[in-house]
Image 1 (tube, rainbow, N blue to C red):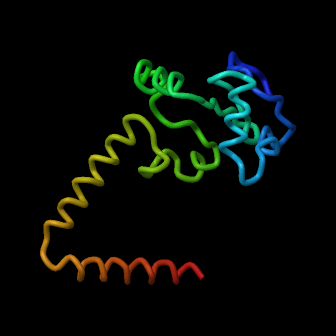
Image 2: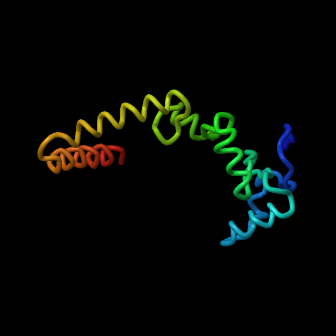
Length: 137
């Protein structure tokens, strides 16, 4: 169920839940720091079946995000979102697809705001969105 796959050390996960139950409720930062003291500045936690690499401390964060930025860039895969959004949408896309969507969105928004009487356009769009939402009842 939980294969180590060359991942950094970390606490043993529970079936189905992973390490979620080992994080103290309302004290997430404290729990993560305690794991860091025990397992080192880079360790693995599981949220459900998904492994998450945790970086704890300035040196680990700097090395991964600045010194080795290309290896650590991008977002992790979340199967539920991948299935639903199919790689589209600025929030859930990644890589080249994300760059194209971002460029398109910024251009569109810039063009939208350069027009006059923006409040009327916003009202019109909001009314359209409300009517669309109501149609799904």
